[in-house]
Image (cartoon, rainbow, N blue to C red; front, side):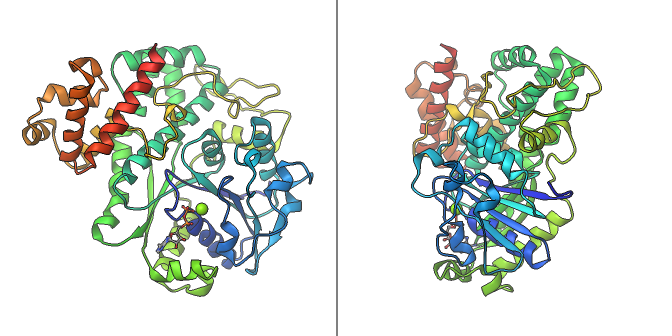
Length: 448
Ligand SMILES: Nc1ncnc2c1ncn2[C@@H]1O[C@H](COP(=O)(O)OP(=O)(O)O)[C@@H](O)[C@H]1O
Ligand SMILES: [Mg+2]
């Protein structure tokens, strides 16, 4: 891996928000500044990144690599019409590629780590599957894109929590603290807590030294947020608000990297398969993307650049023989791993709010009490104010935020209350209630 090479992964809770647009044009902007960029279409189910850089679907793509028809990723890198910019096109119509096995994913990450370039940009599939999260965490810059839509905030929290917990699993595996974390999860659940920060706090309560170590590792999870398709001043404020909630309520240090306006020139360029920053570099959306690149180059949101866990991810990608981890000071030490890479192995530990527990229905994210609480706080509302508006007693609202179904005589009442609660927060009542009830069912299924 070239020194100082930048890896940027662009993800989103749902599709169609502008991931590919942002990924492609960040790549173009860096290429224009003289960096040798490789764009990777890692949207393994819906590859279309080539259309953003004025290419027809190239003959060579990830398919060949995944099917082992070529030995190295370099063989499927294709040039684009833009100087300094190359592309690894995504696989098409291949189920086995859309859901790569663990070994395939590891091989892919390993080879990505070997590509010779200054910047590697991964355009990810939507959602929070382990595949998406592992690519997101592999990158030093994990960038979440969202569009201002009713459920986008919930989606963003869900994505970030999922990535946070996936990273926590890696920390757990690297430091060999599974029993400690299991105990913390049990206490966390028993105390009705729900924010990621509180889970780390619980680890600390049990073992101060190890907890400190875990807290430091998790504090280095510093994703970036881009809000795309912004149409007005309200939309523009979403980014800062989500970043604040993430910091204050969830304990995740999210950096708001910029808002990209909705711009007719964008969809016109996309429709004609013309790269935006080539076709209309001075347009509002183009300038916003250049601004995000300025921020990246200044080092914003370098999530995992220096510490053990990210080094671990990168070593895994670099070296099949397994990571060599530096000794950590304090109570827990990263354990050396033989053979399989613990961070990328499928998890052994069941963490709360596990992303993969959420049903993969098209109905959006599961919503838990901490999300409602975070949104309520973001709206600047106290429980008393919501109680006043909804005529729901404070204790019940509190129980909803704590995912405490036992406080309600029957699910139907709980559902009704959640619906009203959500409406008072300006959310879609029915949808939120459905998602919330689904989340509780998952919790129950896990407990039994
Ligand atoms: N800032 C924007 N202004 C106008 N249209 C946009 C903007 N961003 C994205 N679009 C439109 O939305 C569509 C989806 O964008 P895309 O990048 O393909 O999303 P994703 O990769 O997240 O699925 C694009 O085809 C484009 O027409
Ligand atoms: Mg896309």
